[in-house]
Every structure is written in structure tokens, then in C-alpha cells.
Image (tube, rainbow, N blue to C red; front, top):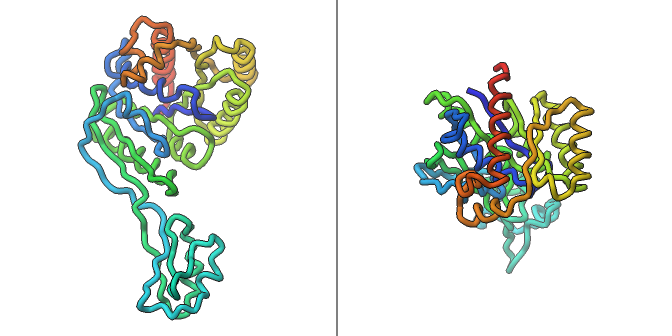
Length: 300
């Protein structure tokens, strides 16, 4: 069993459109391979919008901790409010309360309280789900607003997908990773056999592609690049191609701008299903073929 993670240095490059197309082609395309799907972009999960999942299992995700004040034990001395650096504790009518959104879970108030009236309690930070789609099993999650530990939730999603793949002899886990280079990205890329970087030819896109390639290189993950909407800025496409050539990184395909991609999203379909002979769909098929070939050449 191998793991493919699809990444981008910034949001909006078309990463999820590529992941949705790959999900379809893994199940029904010319280079079929049994795959478990994982949407690791838990802060803004949207792969499910084009895969129409049927939820089989849903569980709460317990994230960080927040302080809770036991009013019966509190002597209203105010030491907790004085020591809180995040202004999460406030006084109202002689009683002290904790704003759970502002609380960072540092527990300074717990250690400062002279009457031990404050405890730390875990908070429900989101939910994760196991679903069935027409293209295979999907693990996805929702992190609630203002919650943290998205890296832990990404790890949970990946672990569940990997265990199912091992238990039921799937050949591949396809991970739609989060954008950027932060902790959630590191969690999504951990253990991957191959990373596909979806780049776009814009000033920000080129810069952020370079950053995510530095990240995959740091963790020893082989990376390939495909350029989405390559024809909108030919000079930027040439710059990406030149950079990859200089650093011995293979560009496995270019995907043209195609209004069919947007239409497919509004209809809740991968573009390879919605418009099989469209320019973007045909380009994605070639990118998929090249990706499968690279995966099969990768030694576990």
C-alpha cells in the first residue's frame, strides 16, 4: 500500500479538483488502482462536495483544553485574571468566568489559583467521518471555527484511511492535503511515498510552490509538479518549468484553463466525469497516468 499526497503552497490552485479527478480515475479510469480517499484539508474540507459521500460513521474530535472555574470553590481573589496573558478570564458581578474562545489552554490560571478552583477540560473541536462514495471509501473531517490542533485531526484522518487500506488490501491512499507549509501540511505529508504539487503560474503561486517543495525535500518525500491554468500566464509557466528543471524536479503535466472545471464543481462532479473530452479532463488523465507510473516506480 502506498500513499499519494496532493499539495499546494497556497490555496486556490485547483488541488481539490485534481484530487477529485484522481479519485474518479483510480476507480474507473484507464490506470485503475484500488484507493482509499482522505480529505486532509480539515480547516476547509470540500472534497466531499464533488464526491457526494454517504456517511457510515461520524465521531467527535476532542482537541485542546480550556479552563473551567468552579464557582463554588472560587474565593474571587482575581489572581487567575491577573496571570492570564490572553484576557480569557473576566469578572462579572463579583464572579470570574472563562471565555472558551479566548482561552489558549496554557493552564497558567490553574497553577495560580490559591483555592484550586480551576481545572482544564478537553473541548470538542470538530468531527471526523468515514463515508462511502461511488469511487471508494472517504475519510473527511470538519474542524470547528476558532479551534486548534488541526494537525492532530489530519493525523487521525490519515491513520484511519491507512488502517482501512491495510485491512482491506487497497493499493493506494490518496490524500487531498491542506494548502501552505504549516503543521497540518506536515501531518498530511508524513509517511507519503509521493507528493504531487499543484502549482499555478502567478507571482504568489511560484513563490509558494518553491516553499512547499522545500518542505517535501526536507522530509525526504519525492515530489512531482503539475501546472494548473498554465496558459493564463505563459511567462510564469516558463519560470516554474525552469525552476523545476534546475532542481531536477519533474513537471508531469500542464492543465489548461477550462470553464468546464467550474461548471463541474457547481454540478458536484469531478471534471473528468462531467466533461470527459474537455481540455482539462484530458490533461488530468495524462497527469494521472504519469502519477501512477511514478508510484509504481517508488520502492516502499
